[in-house]
Amino acid sequence: MAVTKRKLTEDYLDPYVCNANEVINFKFVTSAEDIDDDSKNFKPEYTHQFFGDSENIFGYIGLRVKMIYSACQLSPLFLMTYREKAKPSKTGGVEPDNVYKIICNKLELEPSRDVDAFKESLNKESTFQPYGEMLSCFCIENGGKKETYGIYRANCNTPGFLEYHQRMQTLILWFIDAASYIDESDERWDYFVLHQHITDGDTKLFPFAGYATVYRYYAYPLNIRPRISQMLVLPPYQKCGLGTKLLENICDWYVKDPEVLDVTVEDPSEEFVRIRDFIDCKRCEPLPSFSKENLFKGFSADMAEEAKEKFKINKKQARRVYEILRLKNTNIENPDEYRAYRLDVKNRLNIPFQREKLDLEKLQKNLTPDELKAAANPIPREQRIEQLDHMYTELEEKYRYVLDRLKEECE
Image 1 (cartoon, rainbow, N blue to C red):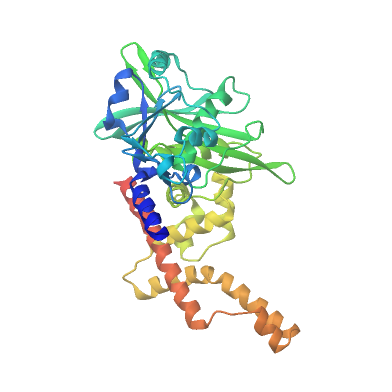
Image 2: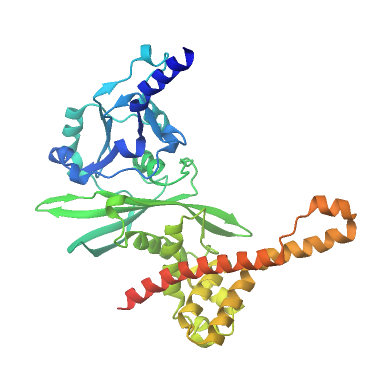
């Protein structure tokens, strides 16, 4: 009887479970008419920070959640509809998720639920002006249309900016995996914000398109080492080169600062790595130390030094740039040339294995056979070679993506 009752309860509950990624939609609007235009909708990349690893919402059938932002001022509006709501009397007392409260608690901000007040606030969109100093203004071709954008730099001393940043940062939890808020009171944070520039008659609008945060770490003795923390370009603005423009402007800003040693990155995503590789290769390729003749001599101290001096590129990234550019100049139809390249990269990939080997040799001198067996579990040579082959193949595939983009840049 108990089993049958539990089965009936489970059958009742199943329809009330939905995937948050599917039922939540985002939209950025500049007018009241845009609110009902579903063609502008896009979905979040991640919802686990709100609804747990399952990314499920419980308690509703036909649930639809709309997170609507005013495109320029980033004032948020929360709308939620559903066909049916689960009754606690039939769920063993389990209440449906309070979706609004869950989102508010995580965002540390309460979106409006008043549609009329939100529509009224849209009348002020044309009064918005980007915060900070404009670093660059440029045009791109997007879907056959010419669009204009500006990149602005601000910090905690920029009047009014921190309040704006509090609304900006609510977006990273949905679109950057494992994102977290930063300490805005720390004066070492720099902010780089991307805005579209739209002119409609006498009206000028500056919709928010993305941003990045950079922390200026201290570097002994009297230098700084900026670290890019988080970078976001909203989905409607992706795949048209804006991430590249944003990162180029960040690098340009710090290159001209004599106190900066080099620019680093905190836990970069695969997409960020590709953008960074493309920019750094494009910049380093004309440098004398990265000439074709020097590339075939192997990675050198001159390459590391020139990349750091000219573009604030750290040694580890300079080595990666060298490998990509050497692959570009390697004739893979020439067996000896291609083999020499592969061995050069694999030797670098093999360094951690070599360190493990040296550590094992030290252990052998100081431990008994039984102690050694318990303390060390070396990877068999055949398995290590197989791992290196796999690592190399994956790496070359990533490098070829960068080379394809470099080729497109030249065409």
